[in-house]
Amino acid sequence: MLSVLCASSAFAESSGVSRSEKAAIIASLDTTLSVNYVFPDMARKIAPVLQEHLHKGDYDAANTKEEFARKLTDDLFKVSGDLHFFVGVDPKWVAEFRMTADPKIKAKLRNEEMARLEQTNFGFDEVSRLDGNIGYIRFSYFANPELAYDTAAAAMLFIGNTDALVIDLRSNNGGYLEMAQFIASYFFSSEKDQLLFDYYYNEDGKRIERGQWVLPGLPGKRMVDKPVYILTGSTSFSAAEWFSYAMKKLGRATLIGERTAGGAHPVERKPVNDDFFVQVPIGQIRDPVDHGDFEGVGVQPDIQSPSIQALPLAHKLALENLAKTDDARQAELDWLLPVLSANIKPPALEAGMVQKAVGKYEGRQIVRENGALFYIWRDRFRVALEPIGPNLFAVEGVSDFRYRLNTRNGKVTSLERVNKDGSIQTYKRLD
Image 1: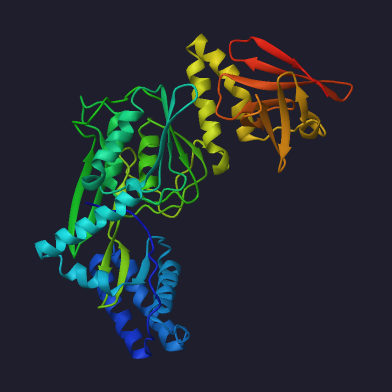
Image 2 (image 1 turned 45 degrees about the vertical axis):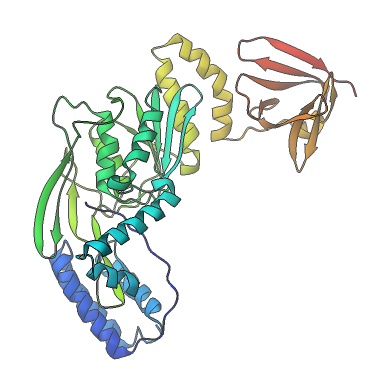
């Protein structure tokens, strides 16, 4: 499987490393890059630069292996401009990598990987149904589908009956392109061949070319006509970018958010010596339409937005587009619009409105604690109130009514419960 994940690991600081050892590490790194790096011309430029830094004493202050690895990583970035490079120190991983030909060792490593992935639910952080029957999936990495298949399938089954889908990749750092293939396949018909990703890569000096196509069989239903919105951020990386890029190129998704990081190349981790490893770009992926990529420049969203506002913006856009062909949807949109607008841009409250709202009303009261308003009734039920307009408040955990404050001559005179069906109950102020 092809991983396009760029992730660094934290290891305990180790003992020092001499200049001669540093020279040997640079020489071994040069050999590793010459066999594996996707751009051989650039690989030949890297070693002389690192050797020059060594001879000038630029690495003398790196007193531990980890410090030297960080210096090498920084210089690999500077020379190549490739954000995928990472040099690390992990003798345990190197030893295990060299023993993976042993079936017992391989099974042990696989079980350990499964345990780690289970702790993060294979990257799937949130799967939910937003107001208006909009599906939402947020995941932080593309896990190995051999291990994450059931979890990924369950996520796709959950949103199968929604009317539109938001896929949140704002903090997704990449992973296995095969998982991107699995998820993307839900949005295309199986009746014709559709290329998703076309790429080549080096495997210990051997060039391999392949393409990834829409899968012919999937658990659950395909969603070939369902509107899809993908949220992107500046830290969306690698496989997350490829998924977004291909879905955009094939006309199956609208991208909302910020330009992505620009890491287009697939990578693998390779040993350098008994302690050091390098994460090296081993190939190049091409999109199925123009046969290009986004290395170094990132993927540009269709609708630019600060990433923190991308979700309510996508939610609002999904409802607006559905409402264009469905009058019932327009009523739903009208009801949800104040909430969505408040999430995009917090409303400006009337001067002192929060404090003015505090008081007793017929059968209920509003109190203020730590700057927030709480609605209390029957002396025991208590929920928070969230401003969504100058005098309008959403109610915690409730979507079918909200509260509005009525004022006269600068004073709050009553509290209104505004119901989704248009009816209103009014509670007079008592103090």
